[in-house]
Image 1 (cartoon, rainbow, N blue to C red):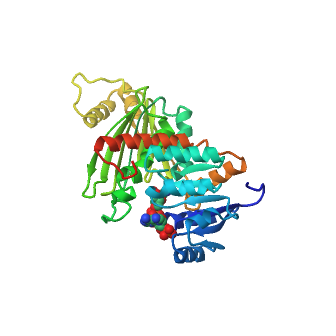
Image 2: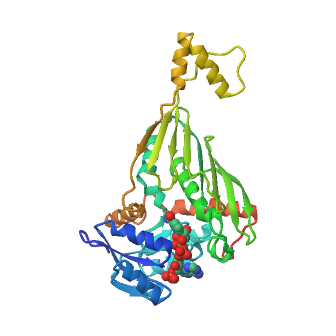
Image 3: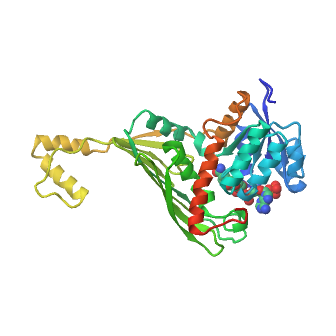
Length: 369
Ligand SMILES: NC(=O)c1ccc[n+]([C@@H]2O[C@H](COP(=O)([O-])OP(=O)(O)OC[C@H]3O[C@@H](n4cnc5c(N)ncnc54)[C@H](OP(=O)(O)O)[C@@H]3O)[C@@H](O)[C@H]2O)c1
């Protein structure tokens, strides 16, 4: 039970890349205390503890899960371990924040959710993007009707990843592939902004190790909305998200999962001037309109409407951004909530159902499926 008024006591399970980032994120929160770390090897736990001034060191995940001085455990292991590491911590009565994706498939994620509910402990997928100030702002702007009715979302995420068939990115046994590692961001954004889709269809490029090195997919919604999403391990994607609506568009600038700039572009009314011979391209039409505008007042007003009146907001990320998801967990724990309303467990399960469906259509199966 979390004590009112005292800091929330965190433990970190796993000492890899993202564990280090998260430890820094926690250090930016005055009401968070990083009290313990657990690693498969005592030496790794000790050097991690030294780097982040952590008092308690555990040479096994089990020992961390059983540490009575810990309120909540951040799980920072590769995807294929999330299931077993979540169950270990939840069954020991610990609240859990588990890295994305929550598990390898929907079956595992459902069991994690059931265990958390049965044990009556908090559990959340660490989808840090959800809690970024400008991602929240995009959600609020859409809800306020700033861009009218939403029509489409386009988002892709990727950057070059060194090829190593044994790494967690390319190894099938470790849950490798672009969809789970990178595609979980555009997919989660679609859930956050458009809700639960009705259908999905996709294509993947499977590499030598059998994992999807690139993937593209489209989500369909009952009201006709579409989300065009993609992920890659092979190179840079645009890393931008664009939401179009009937009266404007919102752009989350790269990287959209941790944006510090958001643009809103309201659309002008349709130009009222029509050419007797419509031009083939919009730019030719615009040129024609501008030359016409020099002569005719009505065209002049149409030219003004074509001007780009994009407004861009800049909001610096505080800390390193991992602090926002940690803040959400701590707010939930203090309010005795067992799930975050912003990142509920059912959504983590539904997102894995979509990913299961795509993988099945590509013939991509993990040993755990
Ligand atoms: N939110 C984000 O922006 C973000 C970014 C990157 C990654 N992630 C997520 O974080 C998770 C970890 O990614 P990472 O890049 O930090 O991975 P990583 O650098 O490879 O670290 C993973 C850690 O997990 C532990 N581990 C347990 N079994 C392992 C095994 N068989 N092979 C390798 N490591 C094992 C190790 O810690 P010990 O040796 O101490 O036991 C290792 O240091 C992934 O699920 C990924 O999706 C999130």
